[in-house]
Length: 146
Image (tube, rainbow, N blue to C red; front, top):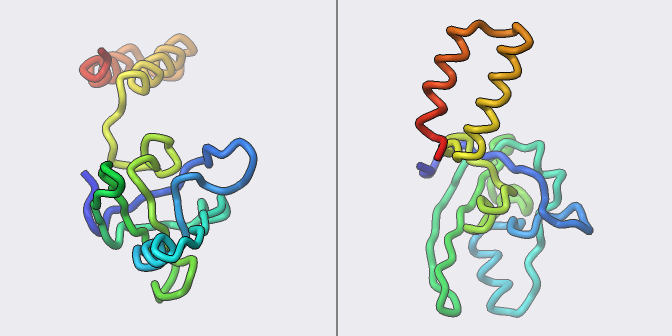
């Protein structure tokens, strides 16, 4: 579960033609809202933001055009001030689905567990882990595989 203060990292951009994220905006909620009201385009975050550590600063949920928008404001943990432009990012619910934002506490999916089990089997076959170590891994991961 993600709460205020949870750490988050940025993944790869899903854009095929630029180094900009498609679901991550530069600025805070007030900046994004002001841009929407004035018709100004929002500034999309670029992948150079990937190297920065972030924590969740605020969480908001709103309804726009009949759909629910879930957004989080991320604070750059390397910054002493969150006022400077570019030190805050706003992400949407699509950010997690597209893996542009990574939740380090997210439970492993069935496919991820299967891939991890295959890696463990390869390690066993190569003699890098023991049968006992493999069985512990298999027991843990089997619960997640559907």
